[in-house]
Image (cartoon, rainbow, N blue to C red; front, side, top):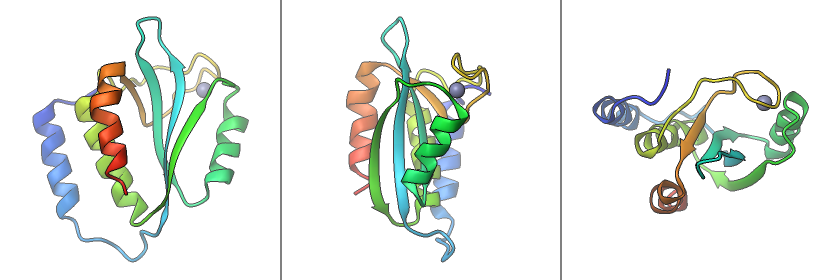
Length: 133
Ligand SMILES: [Zn+2]
């Protein structure tokens, strides 16, 4: 499934935001991995959350031989599952595509992948990421 229309994303975002927070949803890190840069200048990003960033990055390295990754992370985010879900929906609403194609490095289909132009990164993604604080 690729990028969904904004009216649907807005409805999903509002519904998720209204859901009460859960005590099981603890503190963790939200991260953005730049997987690669496309010929047209767009960036392919993976956005995720984890309780243990070191372990998660080791998993990524083991599962996929892409050595060109760059990582940005925001540690100490409370209610990490909720924040990740809302962040995914917000990024999807500003992105070019949410592809489900297979990875050129490991030929598997990665999840939570978004394609953004440099303009969308600067004016959409970075302000969203900064608001995680
Ligand atoms: Zn891969």
